[in-house]
Amino acid sequence: MSIFEVVETSHDIHLDENREASLAFTVNNQSQDDLRAEVRVLAAVPEPPEKAPENWLTWFSLDGEAVRAFGPRGRQTYQVHIKVPADAPPGKYGIQTLVRSERNPDREKAYGQRVEITVPAAVPVEQKQPNLWWIPIAAAAAVVVLGLATWLFWPTSGVPSIVGMTPDQADLKLEEANLRVVQAGFLEEAASDVAAGAIAEQDPPAGDPIPESREIRVLLQPLVVPNLFGLSQSDAETALSEKLSGATVVVVGTLVTKAEPGTVVTQKPPPLAVVTEVPKQVEVFVEAPLMPELKGKTFADGVSLLNEKVPGIQFDRVNQEVTQSEIGKIVDQRPAKGESVGSGTAVTLQVGVKKQSPPSPRVYKSGTLDVTALSSWDLDIGTATTTDTDLFLGTGPAAKIKTAFGIKIPSPSLTARILVPQTGASFAVMSEAGAPGYEGCSKAKLSTNQIDLAPLKTGTYLCAKTNRNRYAQLHLTQKAVGKYRFSFTTWEVPRQLYQLSRDRVLFQRRGVDSPAKLSEEDIEKLRVLSN
Image (spheres, helix red, strand yellow):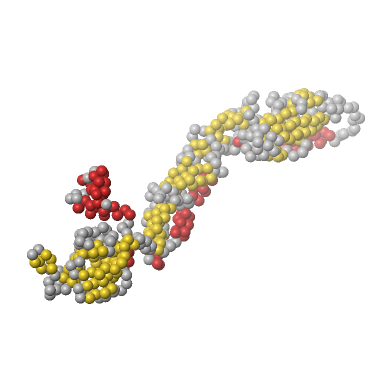
């Protein structure tokens, strides 16, 4: 259905006594768009009487503006004034109206129906003939001038040439000769000397007799999408506008193909594709840019810089504990500088943050230990014991003990001075400079080697790890002959290590090397027995 509808009030017009008449018609916009359209009056097929003057269309004039605005579903009413000269040959003259939009005159147009104007013979008027002796001379001169003008300006008979014109240009030219352009498609192969979208062939060709249908069929030069590969976005836009005016380049993403960064690597429609109308846009992917150096920049500045090169890229931020001078700055990046980074590339930026000290576990036990010769102590409960001990205080440089009848007694010449780790516990001498705390003891290099307490100064700190995997801190506060006083703090085992520590001791006592050798039921029974 046409976008316009032309409705005439009459299709048979008769002149009044002054050889004048009027024709009213309405043009309806059948679309929902705001449009501007032009109206023209054309000669209708078949032709007027044989003796009709060539300029007979000048009898018809349109009142008001020929170009008017139409709102959605809007209409405009037009009036055509008809004035036929007295010497016009009698007969029926056919006209029709043409309306076409400004935005697409070749496709958005409509013709009205044929309207006939009956022109009667002129009524002769008797007039007194004056003595016009000069008329033959003037007539002879007029014949000479008319002949010369005809020779200079009279158009060549037959079909005019419209090759190389756009369809709109051809329409305007052929309307003057009461001919119509009929588009029959596009050439299969492009002609070398015709612009894209222009008329490349016409049938009948120029100079042939005008056909009875008064239609000139034409084939257009095909529209060919140019090859944009290897061009930057700006160069691609220039190349596209030269070949397909009105089309735009739209970058839809980036790819990594090792081409020059920022150049076109794919396009849709593809290069040299033949299209029947100018596409609104040609979608392209461009070669991905190279990753810039972001180290040393803030996270916000790094993201901003990379977004300028690859809009919409996604970032993954990873915090990394660093020194004070690197806090808030990017300390590492993936991909590295110089690597390709496209729309789908995963970018990870490591950002420096302040080092956080792990929170100390809760204190499990604290107090004072008065350690004397040949005594054993359990740091988990803070008391002297003979089982499940963590340390034993022996005597002499090797803590050698003399035995009499199977009873252990200290050598009279030796003093208590050797700390001996027991049942898997381990110790380390720290310093008297300050308390190491949980963090210091958890990082200390602990050992099961014996420790000679004699050289230690009062105020020295020791770290320990009990046989139940709890870290402990001992502070030597007093030393005397055969006696050492320590203040101690033992911290709770982190939850995930607590059961593992208990199970290890439990299995060792029951003669089992690994929990894997027991079923869950057996393990639970052993735990019940140990509690």
